[in-house]
Length: 302
View (cartoon, rainbow, N blue to C red):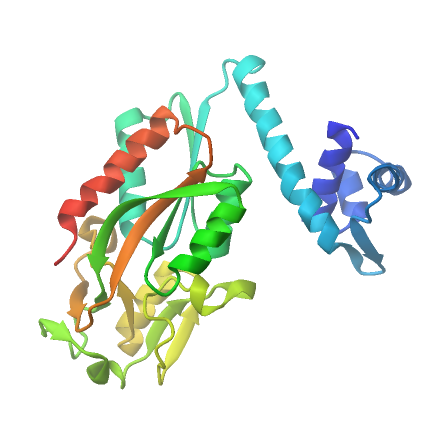
């Protein structure tokens, strides 16, 4: 098994086509196909199901890929450290859709500058946050735990060779437009919300209650709309008087003052956490980012 063969496998998985992957390496399709066949024969595993529509990763292939991506990422880190010594240091974050995580990222870049560093942030699905940290795409991932999802997500985090630490606890708030009919209230209960659409971030194939970004995901909502990005959610808050459930931390300099967070009449507590690879120390950028995130503990609404 060679590093180049591993790169071939990753490229085919990403392209879902041996022919398209071959073009990336300036190889013929038979040459790339042969290299992958040789690897499959060596390890005794069929990595792809080949059809006339493309090449699709098998279940055993998916497990191989999880290790393969780690190997290539670690090789890239070694190459950056000892060969490309002038290359800029990289720092990446993957997070559920939290404005405060974006604001802390902005503050980090503002304090370090971009001359010597390359930054990446991804607001994404819960499962992708975990996979991004596992596969070295991001150093840190931002999630939340509560009494409902804690045991399941804690197990998944550990199974992916990750660990987590708590940043802060907070109550649950209703996030809605400042023009919403309920915007003048000090506290809102579920009965008052039943006539308005609940907005939730779509989790794709992992759209289970445990992977929901919103607390109290098992509550029955008469009206629910799933969205893929924060901009759309904010538009639906204004256009349809929609709402979502959140930590109550508002960054007005990013989203403006057109939205409000009002305490939900419920005793549920959510813990905002960060995850990292087990056995690894945070970089200087990672440590500083965590410090910036922890500052929001003082801004948590009670």
